[in-house]
Image (tube, rainbow, N blue to C red; front, side, top):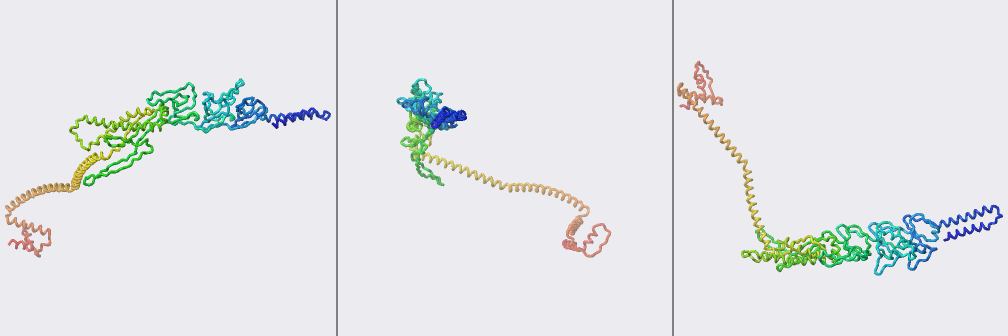
Length: 584
């Protein structure tokens, strides 16, 4: 405003100079024109300097009209064009020129609104039409017109031609939210809260929505007749109540002031019933002589934190038998709203529907099934069956021997019970029952005796096998001797054959020699032949050992071609003399 006063003063000065400067002064015309021009230029420059503003790129220009215009109507906060006060119109980034802009308005630059990823912003309008009775949040803007809500002039009815200018927006928190982006918002009209996380529905889940607002006036309640459970009214999407359509996996920007969600898993869930009882057992020990001794052991079975509940205690033949089990259940997405409406959620369904039904059905089925098994057995001729005390526990043992039949019966009766709350039963599996060990001792002893008999039989077979192995090893070790014996026997047989051949040859030789000697005797006479043979022996002996012959130095002569020469040579020898003495 000061610059405007200075500009006015300069303009007045220029006019006064032009009017009252004496004309007789030299160059007065030029001076007057110069002074007037200077004052006018300065005045215009000062006025121009108050008529523009530069808005930063990440800012929004907000205007408050100070001078001119009519006063705001009573109860109004935001001024429309021609009214004083915080203006509905805003200035975008860049150079903005408007005559006396900075004089008539107070210009304030405020930050743009940034909604981060994964979040949404809730708007609260400071001005607008009042909420209806019973309404706590403004109506949603029509689909596709959300951007018009941020146009404060349009939202406040500033483009209407009538004098009433009825606001299109309701005062208070807005049902329509801002999704992640940057916005130029009139902060004189809206308070903005960007600290709200979007609804993220993961795979394997659906979100059931409970609406507190009536968006669609035509939407009404719906009874789910497909389920034979509680009569729980659901509503169409857009009505107040639990919507009959769940929100599928994804990211959803739902105003938490108007909508509450319940996550419901659609994957298969496992509910286990374990622990909570004292488990006893009897161990059987066997010594070297085969004597069996009993040792009782007790253990406290604790219920795991992940279990739905403790084991189910069933009365069978007067015995209290803890039966552990697990069931597999699943909630279909279309049934999830009914589950939430009827029981509140998966945890409430587990505690209030599934667990009580499991305990009741398991007790009833096991008790009734054992009686049915008894009836089936009674139809068989039992006149020759031993009904000793050991067989009093056979009904309890049905929990082991007929487990699959019990599982089928439990599944058949349990499935419709829990489906009343919208839960589908997929499978029932019974664990090993904690049968009193007294009922199992006789069976265990019989089994152990059978095992001992089998062990003894196997040991006997093992001993026989070891004997066979040793015999085989001894036989293998004697193979060399057996081979040598066979070789010797073969050699002996060959030697026998050889000697026989040699004997026969010698016999033939002797026969031939005898024939030759006989012929020689016939020619020479027996004495002469004997002398010749003796002489041969002597000569052979002398040939082999010449030292045994000792001859005197006698010269023998003669011309006879007979034996006289040899006899003469040997006549004086010690051999012939010894031979002569021997003959005598």
